[in-house]
Length: 195
Image (cartoon, rainbow, N blue to C red; front, side, top):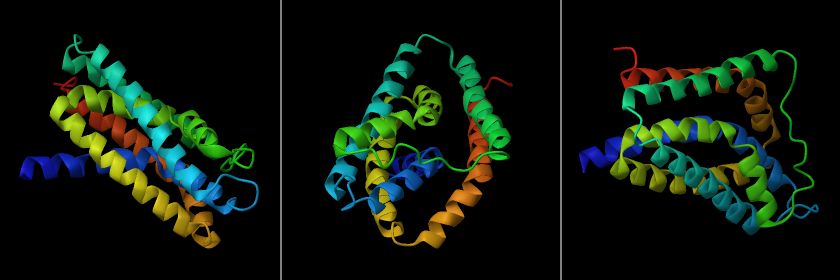
């Protein structure tokens, strides 16, 4: 049971880091409820559909990499590191974009937006699943499913607290990229590539 809890806890931070931007999008979507946007139920079901698609794609690629030695999987850690560095450079000249959110309708639209915003998720989940093995990956999937619900509840609650949303938007431009870099380092170090 202790191993399960440790694995579950280790699955929280990759989800949180890769979905901070998604929290802002979800909050924006919840603000549009009753104003031409999707309904609460469509937002929640679309978020689950989108995250499920991202996890399934990551799992398929991770499974396809089964023949690759684990230490070389560490090279995939370069992807979130590059994304983080790129985002830090872009953060200096651009603000958070919520373009296209107002045009989203229905659960499929929310799922498509989630998938479109999920390149960072895939870049982190592939090496995470590849290094974890089947049991830990199943635990991560359960943790992610629970956290999607938490994310939806949090976004719904934040939808009416614009000061907090503004704070996340201001700090997220530098904090999230730094966390991506940290995840990349963790993947590289955890793979044994540097040993």
